[in-house]
Image 1 (cartoon, chains in turn blue, orange):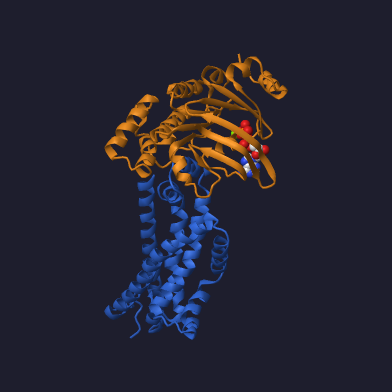
Image 2: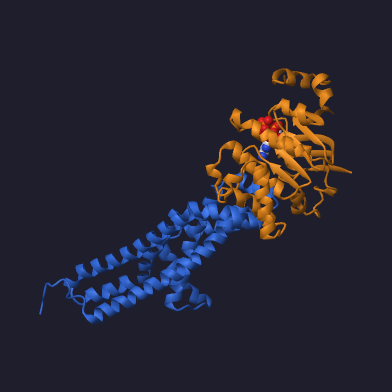
Length: 219
Length: 245
Ligand SMILES: Nc1ncnc2c1ncn2[C@@H]1O[C@H](COP(=O)(O)OP(=O)(O)OP(=O)(O)O)[C@@H](O)[C@H]1O
Ligand SMILES: [Mg+2]
């Protein structure tokens, strides 16, 4: 019964099973991208504003998280939090872990982007009568985000790739399901891995197209 | 009542004593030029008036409100006091017209129609009506500065502060900006404080000249007195170094 056909791996059941995994990967990614973009922006702004004690405190926590391996954070949320009475289903545990880690990475990008804006922009706006918040919303953030698009997108691309780390807690995402599929038959290994590679590529290529579109619109 | 009043003001940057016992009154409608060598504290002094720099001692009354009083709302003062910077500080992400319209819209809640009419009239006044849709990056230095002046005027301020408005400009751009400033000074209700090295402008427009060195006001005289008969040796020396024919 051994055949060498490259498409043999893709029986209807296997394809359906893999697509389900893709759904999980996309689901975790999209929710984490949105959450970490919002949280990362807030944390980055807090660090930038240099609020006495508070900014230092937030900055320290952020640096600790940023320097931990993501897998460790995933393990912590899935295995350690339940011991503290917080039980999260595996999907949401992954989302929380990914969002926490990516927020801290994005916060650093946001802080750096804000630092790169000329002080004159703040002074011009403040002298013109704008409040601190108006200055941020109308003048500084639009300029900062425009500069930050490339690093933010490359961070979000690694977020999509990093969802595969959730295999570590047996989240049934795409890469994990690929493993299950090629465990059926060793000839499936190469086609399945190629298919998965293609899907990650398409996801991330899509992201970079969105980035280009934003970049042109904001230019 | 004076528009701006410094009483025994002291300003420190950390340990560095940048303004020393400043006493100064500027009346409504006056045009005052502030000069002095580099590092004497001119920018620092002018920037305390709209709260871009804090003072540590004394009191500083602007339009009757004490800037050193924590209860004073700094944004209320900034509504009435415009500032023009050496490096323009136009909003890089907004067109020339939007630069002029933004603060009146957000801060004064001026209606869109009135805001646009006022802004266009001001751009026309500073010779930039045809640049309304351009971004700051598409303007020359002199045009940027005139746009920045229009932006300040759109708030209908009671006072305008200028910190070396022509120092970053190519020589051939300076005249247009000074013309606009001269025009503003003619308005008898506008209070102007100008830091500049343009002595011809000072002579032609200023009611008074303040000379600073090392964080102190050394001389405060009428324009005529200052240029014909400076009392302080350091002012005499300064005048002999700058070209003031
Ligand atoms: N943010 C700051 N921190 C520390 N010291 C400062 C700061 N700003 C200015 N100073 C110091 O205060 C003194 C006065 O500076 P200021 O900029 O007011 O001088 P200035 O008269 O405007 O000079 P210039 O003609 O070069 O513009 C200088 O010695 C300067 O080094
Ligand atoms: Mg200066």
